[in-house]
Image (cartoon, rainbow, N blue to C red; front, top):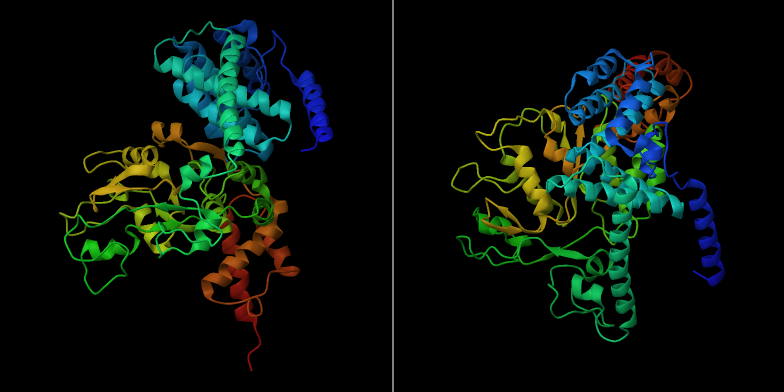
Length: 532
């Protein structure tokens, strides 16, 4: 950046900060957006602010019955924190209720964020963690420097708040201004450390850089590294990086060597030797502008969701998304969006249906059982021969809650938190799953394990609108051609009267219903086609 450009950016940032900086106090409850930007609570007291906001909401006669009941029940709670959590849940459920209009659902979703923020400031750790992730995500998506500063401060503030709650040091009477000052000081300290190492890394013109020390050996101009496994193409390593997922299988019975191609044996050692001791390539981040263009053309109703999903990839060398939970009404296109995001980013996809799962077999099972197998992510890595794959946990809220045979939720938490050294029960050794992207879908947050809500960044999936018919129909036709092994010459896109007929019967809502209508039109083509 040139000196002139830097000066213009500084001037713009300062002017913007002056315009959007929050006031020192307010007597009117702030909106969810204002709270995310650091506005104070009413009277600087969490209970007073929540009470004032609830009174304002009770005067809104447009709220659905579920929300009205939750608002009415607030006064019956002795613990205001619990009241705020209950109210947030009611708004979240209403936010995906297809019986409501799109505008009213959007209002419900905004109120859910506001109630979650109130719950956080009243001492609910789960809400503090959830809203911290929300602020982080918004900070990635915005382009205004001042707005990003305020959102990053809010994310750090809520993380600090969750830490205080964990340590039993939470004080509901503490002013936001004090919390935000501590958060900003922490951010400044981290920035100083990062800046120090970035400058030091850049100044080391000779020898390996800090990044190379962290990511692997230095390759000379010949592009050959004697320490690099010959099984991995050099171009793969140079562009996207690599990970050693499975260090060795020499501890297993058998004679297969690490890195050898599968032989005629059926032992676990021969089965997994092809990827043992081999650094598997990571998929490099593609052009995100192109990826966004493709996805928004297929899912025009979910442009904001797509931006939030792709945001964390900015500046990363290879594709790996943080755990994301898509919440939306049945048929809104959650699973298809998750699959298409992974495909457009170049990741191999495995969809794991969670409905009815009542054990922890997702994590792998011991070889002492005849049905023993490695974890689902590790199997996906072996099939793709890539360290970066995507696992879609479909309908995660419908997983069984029993723990007799283990729990999917409990095991998944351990896998995510210890991804770089996950102990696979089948191979009985550590495996590096840090390149795995976990995307989950749910029709509602009810039934989702609370700890998963802490670890997954939650994004609400909006329902398709009637005006989205054409792009959705085009995307569905592409899917159907792929499934039927056909092409556009034999199965052209819908147009004219066909689209009009489909549009007459579909006014928005479920993509599944739209797909059934499209399939009906295709069947009618076959029926009405001239016979010779």
